[in-house]
Length: 112
Image (cartoon, rainbow, N blue to C red; front, side, top):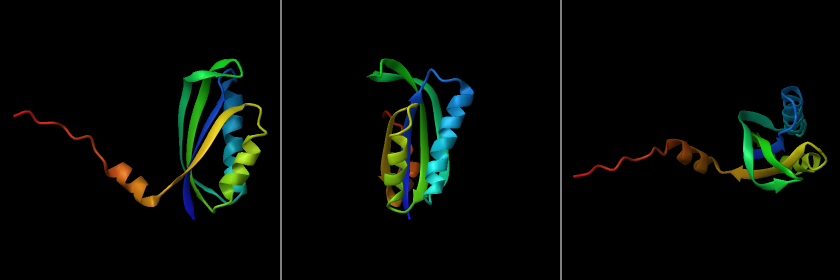
């Protein structure tokens, strides 16, 4: 099993109920193809770096999940067909990388 992180940008002009339905649909795609969702981090409405389909804002959601190697391909194939999904990106997280990122703490410089 591999660990993945999926970032999804959904149209910001949707109401709250429709946004939740879209995110639940994405969660359903992951679980349907054998994935187990670990964490969901909704960032809410953010300004896009550049306009997408003449929209300047999007609703950001990041999902960390574990799954077999073919699951991200299947999930992305379904996301391409969703008209309310503006962009998505799946990255594979290494276990060591995830642990190191969690352990890193900002170091304070001490002036002498």
